[in-house]
Amino acid sequence: MLVSLEVAPKKVFVWALDWPGWCRSGRTEELAIEALLSYHPRYAPVAKEAGLRFPAKVSDVEVVEQLKGSATTEFGAPGAISEGDRAPMKAAEAKRTAALVGAAWTVFDRVVAGSPAELTKGPRGGGRDRDKMVDHVLSAEASYARKLGIKHKPPAVGDTDAIAALRDEILAVLGKPPGGTPAPDKGWPTRYLARRIAWHILDHAWEIEDRRT
Image (tube, rainbow, N blue to C red):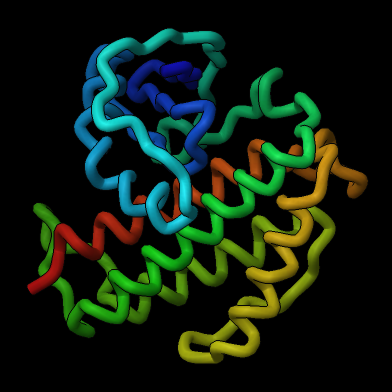
């Protein structure tokens, strides 16, 4: 499996190039890759939801690019745009990428629907409850969408029409090749947008699963 790394002094992010959202972190490269592989069964439902064949087991990992991290990395989010992120997509890859991001939303919504409003607290007594988590994810999606030139107000929790409108517009851009560097100034390449937004969706979906009461 091909992966790339984002390395900061205290944190390393690693992501699978072919599976947007399958991204984990650790204090070292080795620990980050170990964490990524441990989430193989948790990412599998995303691939299934997208209608894609997912490898039953991954043992060989090849690092193809290593990026210098930043304060964003140390804060806890993958924030570096790689050379691979800038590569144009062919039609089939763009369609596949959009399908995986859409599947990540489906998984997130399913987790939210099956979770109580109040979640267990984190190891230090913190952490958002369910609806605040959803609000945070929706606000981030509206912010990320602006990097593609898509301008929507953050949808309110429960406003299914506004949520669908935002997500449909994002998927329409992601699913349309060539998917290279976007038109808006200071925008994000669609490959980077796809993995960043899918990572954020799934990271919080998995957090909710882990903190269900």
